[in-house]
Image 1 (cartoon, rainbow, N blue to C red):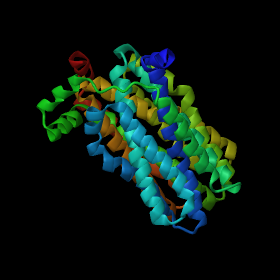
Image 2 (image 1 turned 90 degrees about the horizontal axis):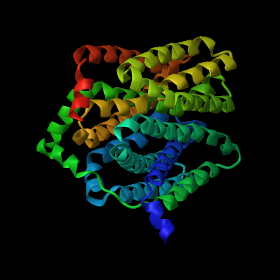
Image 3 (image 1 turned 120 degrees about the horizontal axis):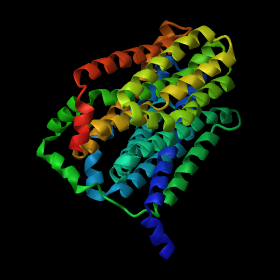
Image 4 (image 1 turned 45 degrees about the vertical axis):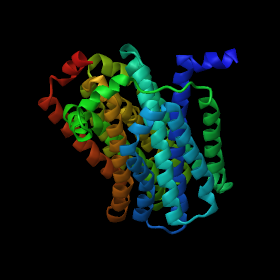
Length: 401
């Protein structure tokens, strides 16, 4: 009993359990995108319809976003995370039983709702209990955990040759393990300081957040576009241009594992040299990496190198975006900022597979690389505009905080 009480009150245990939640949520997303894309492609579904099905997960994220703050404030973080885990687990178990387009579409919406309940609660819980000195590192580890889960997910595509149920059994089992660990956490609620944001109405709060930190949300959009496009479209693209499915799985995994080596160093560099500057540098060189892929596609090892470099550069976009948002916003607006971060990630993740599917049908060779390069170019332009428009904001936000 004493041991359980110690665990409940241990901030280190709480932090690592929350990081584990994010890893498992990332794993379920990373597994679903390529596994279902391959199954739909084999069933003769068009690439654009395949992309639409992939977007369903992010429709779920969007649907729950406006309603997510109130339950967290009313019931605390833990019940919301448990509800999210329950929705994800049940949906994952049901996928292989009835393999039809619209049934999968609805299940993906439910997984999106569950994933967002987990993401929002863990994000706010970690950022509200982190000290300012440790925030950058702790959010980098958060991003690292999501990336690891997302990177392990595509490896499940190779299990389809053994049994179609196997990827779903493994993914739902990990959710059950996470549920056991979360039971040992003591429930907590957001700081009452958040209520000071109530001086503004909901629309006013979102306007203020957007005005102060609009560029900080774009890395989240870009990361969603990039990850969902790669995981949702790339297996289909690979099958059409003659890249073996095993190689496609390796390329996708290498992208995410590339980010594991640089997530924390890039977070530390952004602490030292400024997040806007670091973001613009990694976006520029990430753009070069993706443009290079269309030229080296015939050589698998050169393509692998490009994927690893792109992952090392762009895999930190989401966590750097959250850290930049935390720099720019006063603490009372952080929960609202986190909702917008989730919305932008969902919009990017819906746009990515849909645009990628259309690019594959219209352009063919190099389609995925051009689609992602276009978004990175727009991001780069936006970074320079934001820098010119609001050069003083980061220091002002620090003073407010």
